[in-house]
Image (cartoon, rainbow over all chains, first blue to last red):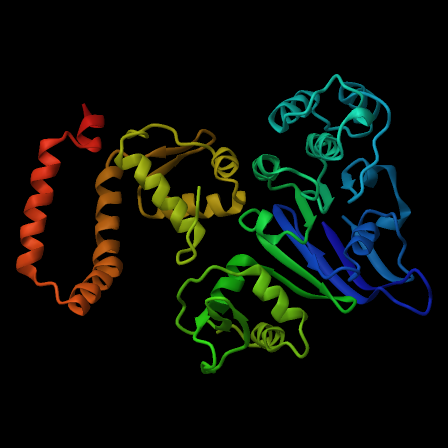
Length: 285
Length: 133
């Protein structure tokens, strides 16, 4: 679906935000894109949807450069930016005026999503609160039924019940033909929803693995403070002792702690990163 | 649904499906929710539910009718019970033994308490027998 090769991008020539970045995204997956503030998550997403153009390298959607902004490409993708801006119309008018650009837009589904998210469809969008505006656009995004759906911090500004509703709607919206990318800082909001984790760090993608693969390779657990358990890859002091990441030699299951993993990958000289890379290069017997 | 951290989510969902089968909420040969619907209900990734269904199909608990969806196998109840029994004996019982030996609780005391438990169960109609009627 998305194929990025040797992509370089920066808002100025001297300071690159993305450097020699490679990434492949497949249909039928929900990707969670994690990165520190300013790591370039939104910049990467904008390159993918054709709102920013690579300085060198390529970013292709089904074989066509995103930067060419072909109508065929654009009608099959939807991008929800982090800061949403709505026109002074009602949700129903929005569906009529903007839905036509997306051949598979489902107006019935749009109104159903609005109901589930508890947003009025006959009120001017500009009169709604920020969270409500965001929900209208989430409902719209899901109803477009585009192959590629890119959501930048979608749960920011949503109240507690809406986050659960959001997970329900996205879980239902994924099909084999759809690829969903969600950037987020709130990993706990999306924990069981995403199947593949992307980590953007120091201008490159340092992780692109499914949660299942991670659980097979790594073991997440605790250890008493002051001890150094053998072969520990990463440790962090927490209230109940150290939280540690170890190689999963025993093949036992432990839940992937995305926050811990993220810290392990974005710290200096990540042993977890080198362990995972080394595993990838080992021949499969 | 609240998930715990010690077991893969797809297996916890398999446990949830098994629970519904044992409680007769989903009787034999009834269609079970589609992957999408169950994923939405539990707010999890549809690929996880797909893995659950593949696992349960491998166990013979559910079967696939082409184009129609997944259905509860006629003998699903026994299979779920056998599977859960095995899992209890392998995983939970060792922990239980560990605790009683640590606390010095003997089999005699256990047997006595188990009799009391059964008597109490018999006095009030339990949930499961109630539902079977």
